Image (cartoon, rainbow over all chains, first blue to last red; front, top):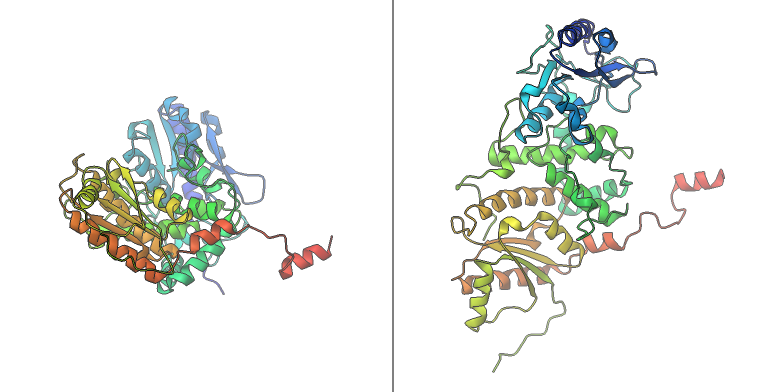
Length: 306
Length: 166
């Protein structure tokens, strides 16, 4: 018998989101609301952008609302925030990504109307969307979530999500890998990276991969092989993890969209852990102008330097 | 004139990424002072350690380096005020990442060598060369480059089953 997770507040949350979206659209406070709507498969959800108050009842929140909607405000969608103030439905993890983007001057707080969601967890990527939320079907990121109630939003529906203490899968997997020898770790990652087909879904879905031209797409000089072969794959994943170090908000979208099931978020979590230990930095709800890797102190550790 | 050069079975390739203001000048000083140091090191000059992208180190390993040295000005001496402070954090993080992926960090050396420290340059380069020589060639990244994703051989159960169903 697997432990079920209480998602009874989601009905009230859905209603609150609908009425709030209706209100802000009708009052003209925002020009559009980015949220989740029911999709065609039973129980599934998909992102939706609504611009009319009458469409507000399309919005839902269920355990199938897995996407990080922050990605709809950057990158290819850069013109959207310019069209006026945008309402956006955010879970705690998505809000951390938005806060990171604000810290990097990609978004302005006053351009956004944040509708926070008290979130008890969402489904893992491999689970059918009409499944109930249990300790087995919950996404790994939700097992170690510390942001169930988003803070600093313009509107948060009432409700206190309750989630039992679950085994922290990322933390235990990182600990397992750290305990291996370097050769074993290399063998592990070699196998994982060899699965990569270089579809760049991880890059496409990441709110922080917003460079106009990615270093890995450049060919003068070509720093990373673009072919889906082991050398280029390994370089790509190392570069990706390095470029997200100190920025990644831990939304685990990279891992969710990976068609080859590479544990991408492990690398990001590992870097987050190291940066927390080294520079006491953690992604949170507070906008920081400087992340750990674009600031410094004169007393930083340099025991590894001769 | 020159002392007898010892014969070794393995001569490691060491790539040194150095900053032009301190370590390059330090290496130059070692040269003009006629100090001997291993010729295994290939020096690449950069404006600042802050310019040295971790991807350069990856690229060096992929292209056949057995060891990599990154060297620049002492903290506080940076020509660009804070380049080496930023580099210090970046490389601290990059080391942790490489370690997690399974690269032996003994092959990657960071150092501060000022323009006056010709002797320290000789010492750092000699130490790293000897250390890497004892470790043998770096094979991990080279093997990756030689490896095809799928050799075309039907050598797993899954592939055999799929092949029989055609």
